[in-house]
Amino acid sequence: MGLISWARLKSPWILHFNSGGCNGCDIEVLAVLTPRFDVERFGILLKGSPRHADVIVVTGPITRQVAARLKRIYEQVPDPKFVVAVGTCTLSGGVFQDCYNVLKGVDKVVPVDAYVPGCPPRPDAIIYGIAKLLGKLKGGG
Image (cartoon, rainbow, N blue to C red; front, side, top):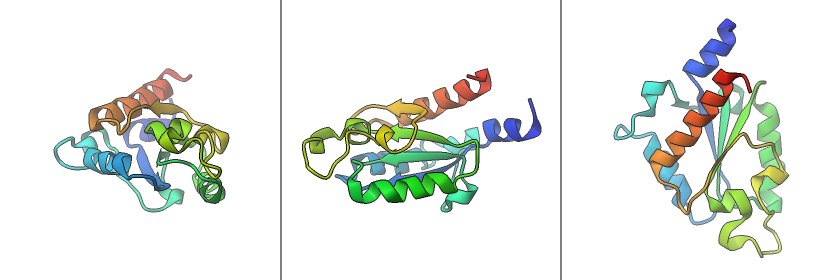
């Protein structure tokens, strides 16, 4: 395992992309970053720039208006990059899935590496999803 791969596993930096909706998932992702759940013990840090992030955490329904922005942000993240979809709205459109402007999931726009279902998912489920992603990376597949 090279030094860069080791650093990515030991300190994944995340970028939170919220596309709107009810903000329930957004609040849960922010709860993950609080001292109560303390994800910094895993080296997970929230970054404000896609150029410094390794993982994009996406919440909210993906609309046609937001799809182009998400694609552009995804392209700005350096390789190898990973996407974690959090919440039912992000996975399938949720309660908004029959709206004319909502796509049927984030995987129609960018490839997704880990899915965290729920409306909204609990913070421990989000941590579990990110941990499974890290385990997948450590296993090499």
